[in-house]
Amino acid sequence: MEDSQRKLNDAISTMAGSLHKNYLRRIYGEAFNCSYRCTEDPSLDPLKFNECAERCSSKISQAEQGMSQEMQNLQNRLMRCIQSCEDKAKDSGHKDENLMRSVFEPCVVNCANEIQGALPKIEKRIIEQLKKF
Image 1 (cartoon, one colour):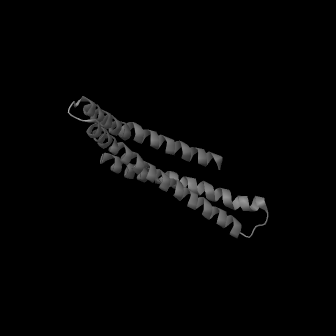
Image 2: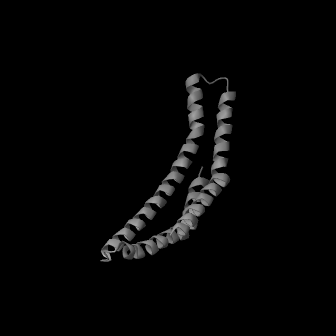
Image 3: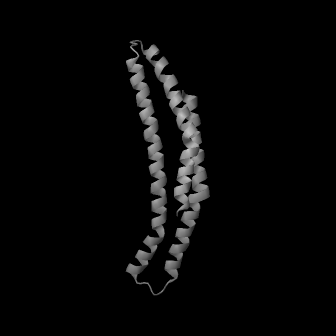
């Protein structure tokens, strides 16, 4: 069970790292360049400067929020699956903890495998969102 959890965590970390490197960094760079252009405009009073800088950084917030929402959805999906495994173990009628574990653990491994199998589609969905920025 720990092995499947580790593999899932590694796959999620790899996906998040790839998304950050290939998409978020570009968004950050564009926002920083935009903010720099705000500093170069001597006609901006402090209020207009702040508005300019905030406008530049809004894409970062939106992109991170979208990615965070997808990751939260992924976590929720995994937790629902694990909860279902807990219910199956309880409903199995076994009083012995080891027998309940024999129902629960393979189910949780299956949850991790299902989520890992869905990662390419989730990553594609996140990429489509990030390309809009």
